[in-house]
Image (cartoon, rainbow, N blue to C red; front, side):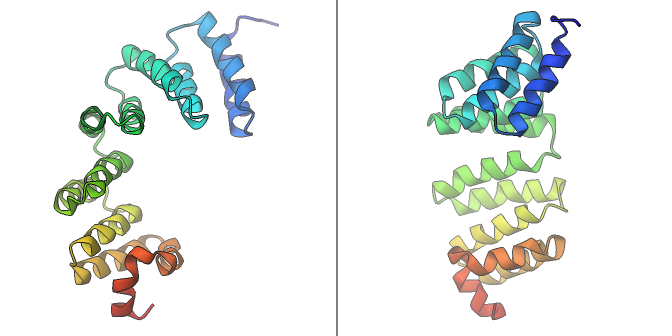
Amino acid sequence: IDKNYDKAYFFLANCYDEIGEKEKAIECYSKVLSINPNDLWANANLGCIYDELEEITLAIKYMEKALQIDHKHFRILFNMGVFNKKLGNLELAEEYYKKSIEQNPYYPYSYLNYAVMYREKNDYKRAIEIINDGIADNEDEGFLYYNRACFYVGINELELALDDILKSIELNDFFEEYMKKDEELNSIRVLEKY
């Protein structure tokens, strides 16, 4: 009825993305942007699709456009952190994670990704500091406790690690089975006889 109704293309793109038809999703999001180049989520979603397809240059291009449209949106900042980490731009990734946390301290994935950057450098103490802040703002997120437990194992604080594993299981029983297979936690399974 209206070939220039951008919202129809937008939601069609989302449907294609959900069922794994990435190329059709790209076509529809591109149509949205031909009608409205400043559609925040068409740009951001295209960036995420290109990231999934491991076309990081295109992912960055569309996410940067989204960032120009809304330079304070926590998810856009978070995604820029993810993309820059993939490119090895660690300082820039860290800045984006910090900005994402500033804009929305209740988005736990920003803390997690930021902390994991330090874990990967074997700086467990800094990773724990970051994730402590995340837990303070998101105390019901079991995966933050689970990851902090892994960080505690890295510095041989096994009792603290066990406390965090038990807390993560209390919040989400998924972690009980998951931790049984996680080799990183072998040293604390002995404490609790899992």
